Length: 224
Image (spheres, rainbow, N blue to C red):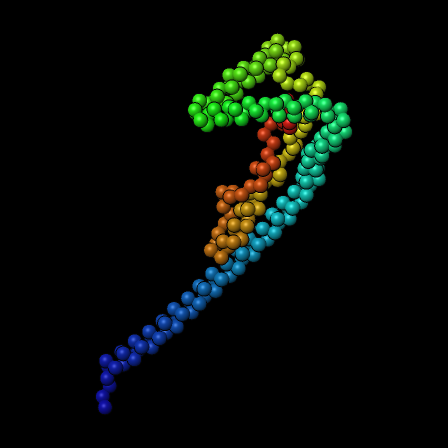
């Protein structure tokens, strides 16, 4: 038997291939391990960031609730209580208001029938040109930009509307703490396995529902 050079090279090649295959598997295993460790670190950091943001938001919201929200909502209860107290004094005006509305109902029905049959737009015409003109005239006589008499011709006196109808509710002094940071931290926690980071975009911000646009604006509830 002689020495087979070709077979020797083939054997060496198989051993080298086996060796490199083992090295490749080892490298892949180490790469996977490194990625798992990185994912674990990212998720741990994202979790603690979310918890810190959540605790901060709960704390700020609790302070906001007691210092700003309760006094603001308390104005509505105060107004309801005042209207109950003034009910005996306002009963006549409520009755007069009801009688005027009830008396106008037949005319509304008549306008509706005419508009339904002939499509003339009588009700819109009356509202725009008759009541609209009276409203403009009332404002001109009453407001300081007009004659400034403080007298109404189609509304109750200011003292009556303030006492019996209006609620002067001041806007909330500070809006609800923003949920943007909490929302971003939550998104980062959800996407931590993908290496996600806090998005710059705020998907949900509850503070928008309690935004005080103009602190000097005092809305009135009720009709004048």
